[in-house]
Image (tube, rainbow, N blue to C red; front, top):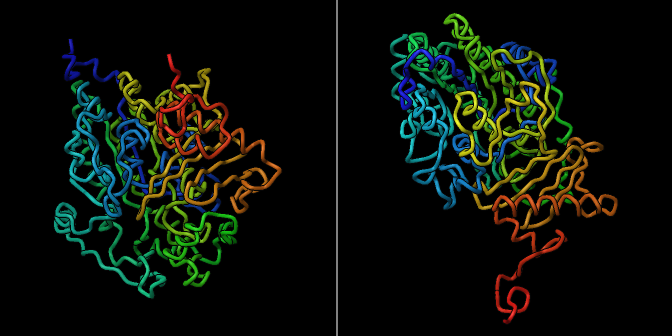
Length: 510
């Protein structure tokens, strides 16, 4: 018999292994499986062909650390309260509170090997090893090219060091140089950080495969690339892979910011969009696609190892990212205080052994839902992942009720900036307490160029969605609803919105 605490014994192999492939700041439309006819992503396209593609997969918040903390815990950001990246934190909590549930600790308690190779960025003091992940410590938001393990990898393989040229950047409003957006990398593919990450993943996979075959332990292994997050720094082959002349610019490049929250125009200036010729935008998109191709090829090396080790039939494979990227859409780069589809809708692929191939699901699902799915694959009660819901019923085609909308949230980056979003089939509502709210008709305006919040036509839609969002936030315990209580027509209010408790609204004399 197996030991309940460690999972030792032959029956340990009856639980699914999990290979979790993750990128950072990755647009869905960079993959062939999501409709990009020019994409060179055969590995991820094959994963979609042999598994399930989710077409409405959203991040809970379009920023690295909070979204990764949500994946780790199965909790929405407002609940776990890790709300900003360390590098731009303005006073928010930076690490999960002691005692917070995480899937990795649950997996280890049930006898799993657990590894993470690559980007952590889910906390500052508490690193991946703190929670029980094997793998090299690789902190920060970008490829840590001065990391000791990476430098040792270069030395051991007689590979040249990191060196770049052809830097691409604009000019900041104060006249200074803008953020680095792209550069040409003077290293062979084998020296890239992406190749290094795939190599270390394969090494750990081989170790875990030995444990699994011996009947000792199933495994969870995550490969988390730092790219294709900007700056897009890739070797010649990928820097020049796509001709900028063949790049179709996003339609939202026509953004005027008329009727939009002023912060969006400010963010466009911060990312220096208007200081660069439009040809530079085309080149940036072309290089971004090249970066995606480099990552696809490195994922291919790991998938080949999975097959070589005879683990395909026993291993569920996820592919997703923490959030999207603007790459010029809405005259923006990176991500930030603008809840557009470009950064909230992301790729999401899942292949479960024995599951249907080539399936496409259109339900609204979230990165958050991976947590409960991982736990169910491991035979662990997913209830502690309180805001997460297993995707296995959708993958397996079971009859299941599913929400017809999804809520996302944002808390700030560089500065506090609270937002909440409700996305349903046709419409999207964004509540911005600082300025103007947004309502988009995605059927007639798929690129979200026209804010119709204050136009008379969709007034009933606005009222209905505002009420729905209010109730969802209230029921979750997200106190953002307090603002909505006093500001909007959200239906019957069953408490004193002033919170005074001193008059007949809430106090009835006996």
